[in-house]
Image 1 (cartoon, rainbow, N blue to C red):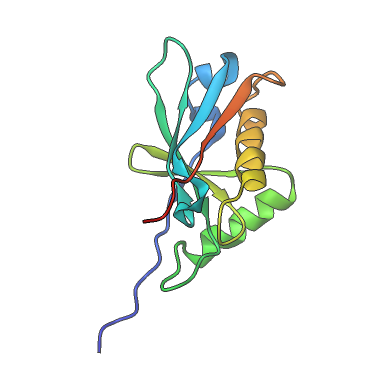
Image 2 (image 1 turned 120 degrees about the vertical axis):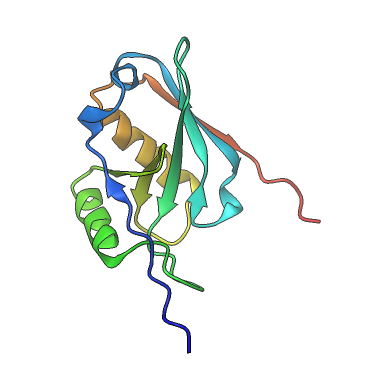
Length: 138
């Protein structure tokens, strides 16, 4: 019998430790693929004159066929979301914005990026979101 899979536990990050340009520049978050890719949507944050930062959206409640996040991260994600914030975590060099739910939809993506902008002290309206459309299924 194989032991059960341990769900990933990501390291929480403090938004104040992120690069200063995230709060000072016009920033765009762009998805690499459409939102229908599942519980994790890969993307990046970019601004003119700065090296882009990998930044994925992670729906922490997806649990089939295996949990995508440890219980502690899930609970913390729901706590901060309830208070109008987003949990910022890291996985290697990539940022993760943890979102309640099992899938990322347009509203969740917009809210997560908006909450990140607020967390880093960005001016209202200085963040944009660029979503990709899913292509036809073959």
